[in-house]
Length: 393
Image 1 (tube, helix red, strand yellow):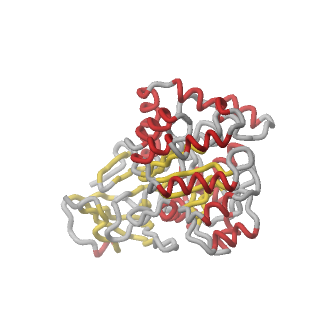
Image 2 (cartoon, helix red, strand yellow):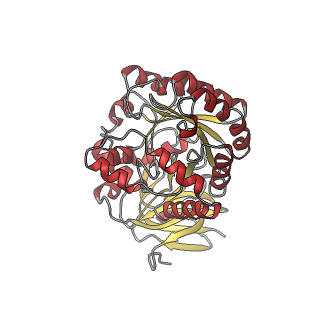
Image 3 (spheres, one colour):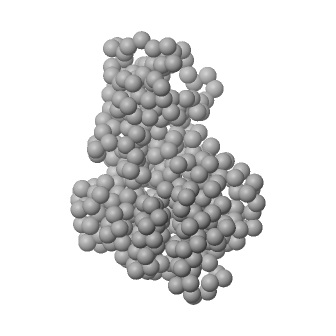
């Protein structure tokens, strides 16, 4: 059954190759879960069903390429302490690890599904989900298993931090991460990630983790340069990683490496908002020709938001991006970071993942920050969320 969405005030189509594109006074047709046609409303072919957008904007669904959704507990007190002046050091991860290990599958699944549903209701139609709060073979394996229930973009992050029971014996823990833990997680994961930071894993250790994952068929991505300058971007580019995530503290050499590679710089402005860190300089990256994505990094410690709209607004206000650049990075850029060509744009043949805003333009995502603008969401052509009485026939 085909559906025509017509009277679209602004239709954001996007060129997956790197540019924002839109039409005004537009329409599109969904058929078989895909985009079958886009163009001016007055030239739209007939369809089985009609939805009147009433001048609202329609965008590709957000693509959130960095999220930690499998966990138990919360860290509100830690956030309050940061707001009172305590710096973020990633030490609170251990508290989430303890709570996650103690939680039942039922509890973890309920929390995961709540956050996944929350994302969809806000217009995120594709999202990645990491393990990393179990840090035992059994707990990482169940984290990956649960993540695979809600998304195909599952990342094994056994190399998040060294858990307390290993003390300072990083080598012994890495043997577990690259051996039995990887064996248990690889069958259900697509990606492998590592937290390459001074108090987590070194350059050589991170490279070894990614190499072990590649040997098992997993694709690399890296937590890089979040807490200070370091080798994370270099590790990511040398490993052929799809994405280097955070990129808060970059040298000129880091920017040059990213610009000369296919590695996407995934920026996570919600983390800087929640940790009172300097924001990444997106303008510097874009001017150098680096592909930039925006994601939430939804997690209970450093950034407990699932709102891609908030991240778009922060990118515009704090990172020097135009509204068009920020929306492209939150849709097509996220798709590039996941090496997906079927999402992040609304070209013919793309998956019919749509976000309709209760606003006439994509600009309102930054122009009206904090306001719930999601009018309706489609995933693979099926209506996944809608405000009551917002859609007219």
